View 1 (tube, helix red, strand yellow):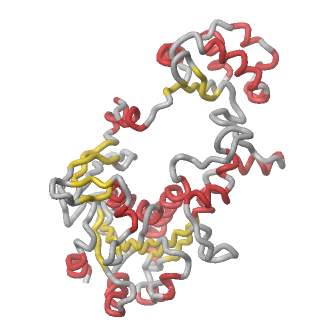
View 2: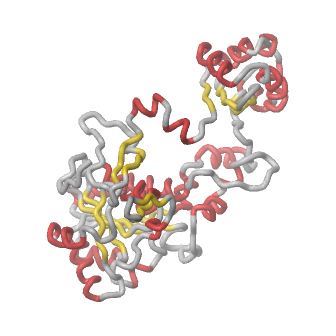
Length: 390
């Protein structure tokens, strides 16, 4: 791993100012940085991004600690520290924005406008600027000024209504999907807008909301409601259109199978020694199995208790039935397929501690993802950025 001033990649040469905090904005910035963009993270001098204080904090022998959470979203970036209350620093930021290709920010709606760093002000000096704002509910509308965190938008978006077990208290998704889906949508739209700006000479304003992003990924649930008028409900690990398509308990642990068509269902019936279930009129089609899945599960579950999860996974793999263990993160990060894909990479923290991180997860011919810059100490590149860009 090197601190390269000239990273390679499909976005090499793209200049990005990231006014990012915690997750959504920094994740969007990290996706661009991983593909070669020069992403400059703008932070306040007194503490910087709040995620710098999030544990786990890995310390060196001198006791200098660095956040591994922060490192996971801010590798391959540079950090520049500016005081947004200082007129001179604001003037420097406007000069940087005048030569930037992209600004990405996730402040509450209107904050950067009041500082003279909004789209209207910056695009007047840089018409090709692509300016992406990520927020909970969007830049306009009745909720524009409403505060948002991942869990509140999961609740607002409908995601929590279909997560967990039917009739149980609401639970959020264990991964912060509101933040990270917004970051994904933002980075994708930024790439498209940059192409348009290069072709037309005109940039654009991107308004990416966490609410819209979570509704966007819920296409199956929203179309179910539009088509039936009935609200989708939580089904645990089950599926409204397929069965058996869920987790089952073996003699020692849980495992999951996905028999998504008639042939796979027949294989499951034969695997558990109940071939007659394949001809049962209640389960004669995918639609009927989904409709009667409670009865089907009641018949299959006792059979699965007779063998271990590993034995059932071996049996289902041999029959071509999609199946998987219920891994925790130590298990999946140590999996041979994850190793084959190169998803876990070594990472050096600025304090000298060696750790690991997950790499850019999509493979591209002609481009080998690298961590060319370690996560930056606060403000480490302020002078370099001013010299390089200006």
